[in-house]
Length: 252
Image (cartoon, rainbow, N blue to C red):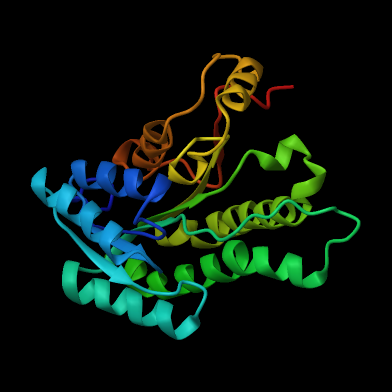
């Protein structure tokens, strides 16, 4: 049985206790995946996501882990396999602080802080899930990127550089892992308001939406739908791509 026709396997979603990750976790559970809700902090919030999934008839468990730590990632993947089954779908979503910084004052440590989340963590996760995916004959890796790469925002230079590097990993992994039946893609959202944006003034949202060809803000469900497609059998021949989910905001 090939991956494209098999029953959905276990999906590991990092940073899934809130925000985009929580919505992605719920969507993949609705598609039939047992879902590992990975989180670094916020056990109560992670538990609520699991409860929602179970109440809807899905299968989920919460797993606490620091996905920037090599030993913690190895233990996470092993624990998920023991509790839900081998990981066949990995959604790399966890993120850290994204401070606005004067680009002329950015330090190497500022860059390292972003690279830790968007290069180190994805690399640790990919390497940890790879043996199981190879043994099963395939898998899906989806990285949550950003359209900030095209927006050229000077005060987000460190974040932008790390996000560009993250997608470069996607392309390299897609070529390297294709022979193993593993697809690797990036979903690059625009500004999608979630819990951490609750204090953003309404006028800022209106101004942003006015710049979007579709004339609205994006919704977390828009991002979750793109991820669900990429891990589905319908996307079995799609790899190395970067799908922007931003209403056309960065069109030339």
